[in-house]
Image 1 (cartoon, rainbow, N blue to C red):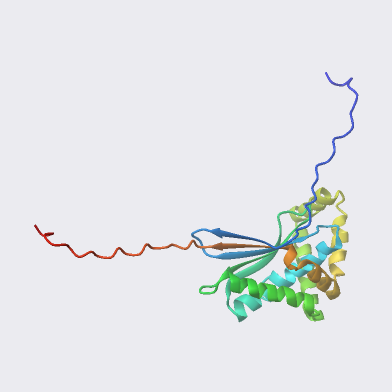
Image 2: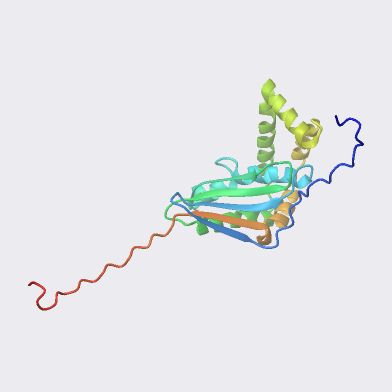
Length: 226
């Protein structure tokens, strides 16, 4: 029915770039649940080289009990019962680097936030020991290789990069980029990214229940017993 119609120009693609954040954003959600804290920073996605750098940062800060945030907040200061880092909500477009933590009673989300920000600043200020950086490289290499042992894991990796980048061979290039991430690159990305104007903080806390003051007793007047 429509084969004879002349093909028109393709429609313009929708804008997918989020404008740069101009200042810190904060949100507080009150709900009858255990308190929690999330701190998020905007970051680019692959093939921007910062994406591979943040894979290193994510592992360094929040992967396992030997990570910096877990050692500092859960084991040393004990202000949090759990902490981790991850990227969300997806990989096709620029996304967020997120630190999530649960305060340990009686400590507050503000105490946990202060500890997280100190570790992020430390990452920007101090050079990373080569032994610690090599440990992270080994962890990333293992997490890349282990899924390839099965047909399902291999198919998942190949299809992921084919869908995301249009070429499954990008998987190999991404692995090579991860191997070459340096401590100087980590410091540079941390200095540019972990700034207040690029930060969004979300706090989940229990609602404050106010109890009405008791009504003072009134003495009975004359003749009240009649």
